[in-house]
Image (cartoon, rainbow, N blue to C red; front, side, top):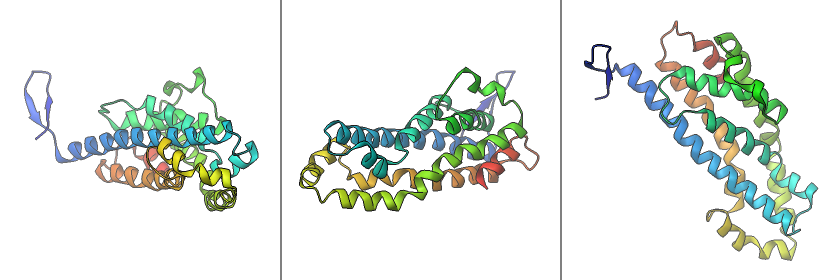
Length: 212
């Protein structure tokens, strides 16, 4: 059983609803860290193939589309997610704060979470973050087709196995699908949080907007 410490120093058991929320918050942080690691491997593969001139810039864009942008955005998100989140508001602030960054593909001081202080600001910002994935997902199957076509080159085909070793032992196709899978995961996690929230929670509008 989990406990909370009161002002008087007494330990009281957490309610089932609070425990559920904390479990979901921890899952978001843990799975986000694993996902960012996968994105970094994907970008590492892209840079290796471009650096060895096995893919030109336009060809790399066909296969990897916006992978580098996703890596930058989600790396920023990960830095904003506390290692042990204690409230839903911390998660909402983290997603909301990077939404404008995702739209610009850049980050600056004005992207501080403080500029999104209320739930209506977060409700407007969260969907913008999720939309950064729209281009990648729309071009995913075309990217696989481009990869298959480019592998007809003997040099690129010969590089397949050694590249797999550099990609954490995974085939490139497994890395390419990771953003599509993560996009599907976010609404599920957010809906779990909604199910554990009280109906009158101030954070409900932000989560409802993101999970829609």
